[in-house]
Image (cartoon, rainbow, N blue to C red; front, side):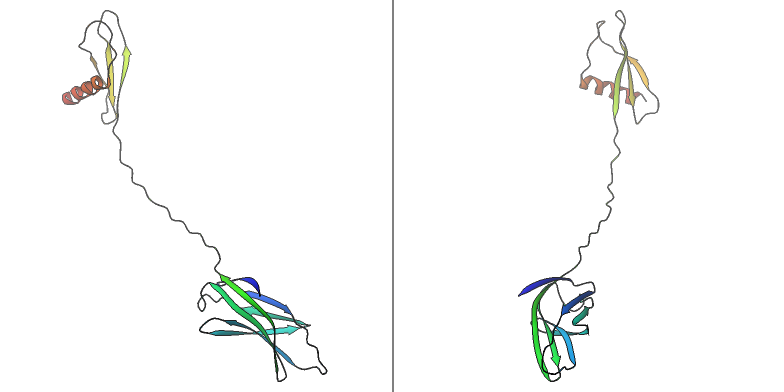
Amino acid sequence: MSKINLMIDEENELTFQVQIEGTRPGQAKCRLMIESNDMSLAFGGASSGGQVTVTLPPLDHILKEGVYDMSLEVLVDDRYFEPLKVQGEFEKRLKVTAESVKVKTKPTVRATATLLETKTKEEPVIKVTSKSRSRPTSTPVTNSSSPKTLSDKDIRDLISQLSRRG
């Protein structure tokens, strides 16, 4: 049994080639049957020139996604024929949605210290700036006369002393 893919949330149009042979011509009616465990759906077909066209409306309110047995039934006068059986695999069209997420950021407070100049006989002057203060301050380092590399702890101590003065 062959399988055809159909969209459950859209209209589907199926066209079948049907040949009726016999001794006398008769009036033929065609319909497509979709069968599940608990129900059967029948859809009438329009025939013209040996072709039958069946239009399936969106079925998402009746059927669930999945595979269903389908058969084309042909009624000629008082005779019943089932010339075609297929399986229809019904699925929804792919849908992608996205939403923006607002991320709250915490304000960061940072302090920096920059060595402005070094004099050999005088003490070095260090400029300390802080983003939380509006004006930079300068203060001499109270160390020996030779220039010294400042550690992170020395810089934090300087900032702490400067913030107590303000």
